[in-house]
Length: 402
Image (cartoon, rainbow, N blue to C red; front, side, top):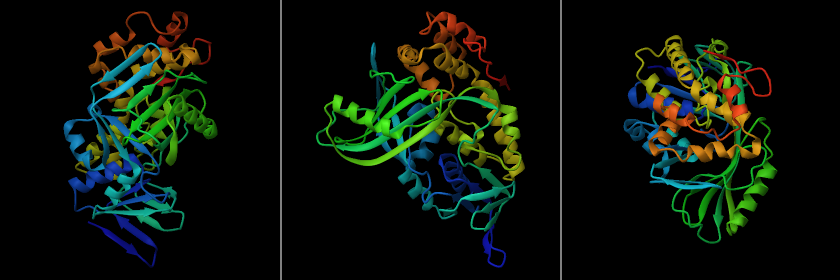
């Protein structure tokens, strides 16, 4: 075990150094600390707190029971079912739903003896065995992982899921007994749009306005107004906005994963930076959990060995998700923006097991056939080019090299 600082040379040493204190790196640190309490683990985060300002949610079936057990200390909210609402469909799904807050995330990780945190300090550069900080300190480690979030790349073709959420306290109880994963029975503006609701108590609820769009611009003022209008339509009087969060998540339409990974030869990436997220939802927690388990089980924690394992996992995952990228092209290219909700409205009429496997990114061949069976919820003349990997308007098709 190494854990020290050479004050003469302003150098810090650690067995594992993680650039970025978001979800992926935080879970890697947690699993390594459990599996190898002899290791010194260092997380470097540009912000003041680990995890930033986020709420991460997942279906209970997104992870295995064993993974759920080790995630348990991070979980703040638990529900036994979830709801969806569309113009022509209402449904309750008896699938458990869980949420992690960045506040709990930060508290848990800072309480682990062999995890050290340097916060409020950006990374200036990194390599396979060192990290240079903006304050000119240097960190040396046999394993360096870059988990600083998604970085733009010419090798991925993307759409975007954008959102702004407000954790509010209402004057009166909201009446919800479960999360509303999608309320798409609202005006469709600029693309597929829905409201996401997490009831934290009888009077506290997270109201999140979410929409899928072709660009990554986020108009936060417009989303605040839309949240206020939604609350008013439900006769909810907002007494206080406790907290606000926003985000822009990448949604993959196509790409060249080999070329993408070739850009990360210096230090292995993780999380969104490794293109490890659900292609349709943009959520990264299931992959972050699997990657944390993968790294914790490695016999060697050298950057080269871990990097090769992560690269193999990422490329195999990408190949297995080709079908989901096809669905995204149907959603973004084949459906008219104001009618994209019909794709999801149809989806939520399918069997619960298929829906659970979809969110876990583990659909079977039979599931995929079922998803494409019957009359498509988009114009057929626009759906067929998408199936063949071409844009229906003649725009260059996505790169699908693997």
